[in-house]
Length: 338
Ligand SMILES: [Zn+2]
Image 1 (cartoon, rainbow, N blue to C red):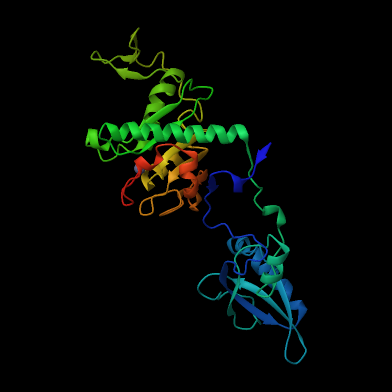
Image 2: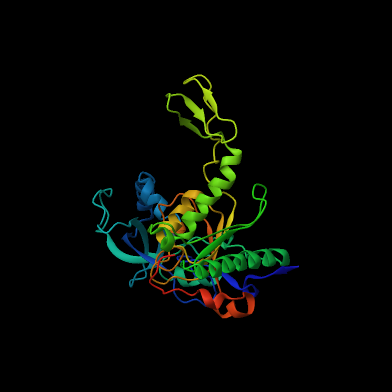
């Protein structure tokens, strides 16, 4: 029994993903330089010109290379995109007209309706296989996610009761975590400006899991020996002989494969920490309009230079009261960073 995205109390947050409804009337465009000619033999040198420019070739892969039109004197006209930079190309093969600037679709067509609309501007390739697959949830997943969010809310309520900001997060048990791991913001009690929930949670996870499973922590003792920092049986080893095995690849990324449940949208710093920790996905309850890095100020995991992507799910605000308890007590001012 699956539950569709429309029927769960959270929705996937996507910024630049093109709307895919067939009745959608707008689509992203880009400026391009085109040349026009009537002799079909002039096509081949331009194809070679484009293939010799891999960056440009990559940028026009979603387009049909040639547009065919008819002039006022009923003559067939061919047009080819020869540039997408702000300046016209100055190295075209000889004999072509001066490039003219025009707007072209910036993305391929995912549906037949898009294909028809975009073709009026410039013909694109048709790539229905790029349509995102619909994400469905099982009843057990919905229960688990709701449970993770409620645990975060409960922790935020506790944080508020002891004078902290009511921001908290939770990781649910997995093969290395035998119980849920919760953490809250401690900026008030520590006076430390960076003790946000995510930073505290990543740190708590490192303390709880990594210290149990990875190579022992090695420190230098007062006699200048390397010592394995084990509280029960501290062992001296001579320098350079028994060096501990290094971290296995990926072990340093604490959140690999894990889902973070958090009461408030993480700030830009925390979102970068989540990228660095290789989190699998994030569910948050309250968007932080002025500071959030998971969709409000920026959608950090979708920035082009980011080397790890993760899914962001935002709670549907109209479903709050009917799904989570005590959630109304943990609202914080919008200008705070979570
Ligand atoms: Zn933060």
